[in-house]
Length: 200
Figure 1: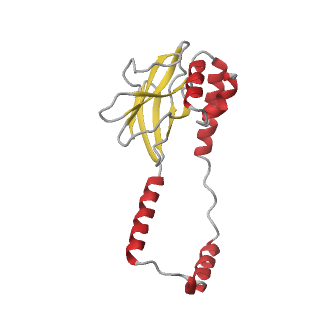
Figure 2: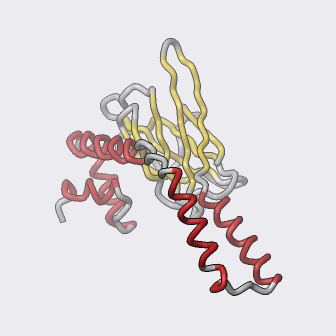
Figure 3: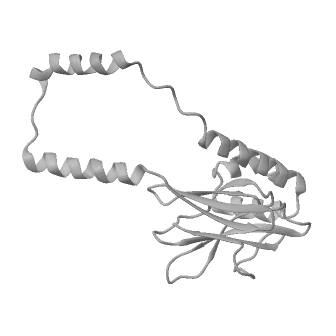
């Protein structure tokens, strides 16, 4: 297995845990893969914030309502309890589908550093970091998930100061997501106070 070929799969979170660990160890020693991963993460971030689709024509709403009225005789009413339960389920699902976006900005001299956290209903999360300087030689930025009343666990490495990273593992509710600067290859526990942090 050539670890250089795993960059795209890692960026898409498509590696199993053993492959991901092996790739992350490799990432700490390979400048080419770090640069390629940063490029892929920026592309993924750009796609996530792509332009909004154009609004549908006003006639479309009228046509849909007209068609629905014509088919009204085909509608079978739900029993009340079932309808309420479904309504609550739909509302809960809709609320869960709204991606939680948090941003924390810190000013340091003339630069603005920011960390945005987006958590999906299944707990998978992506962070977007901007404004940090590139990690110096021999160092890397490491993301951490810190559950309430729990120990920090490593969630991903990056070296670019502007990056979008899909975190490993899931982010529990009200957990803290933090970023520290660590030695290349990462560490198992933070060795410094977070540079950036946000609560999920």
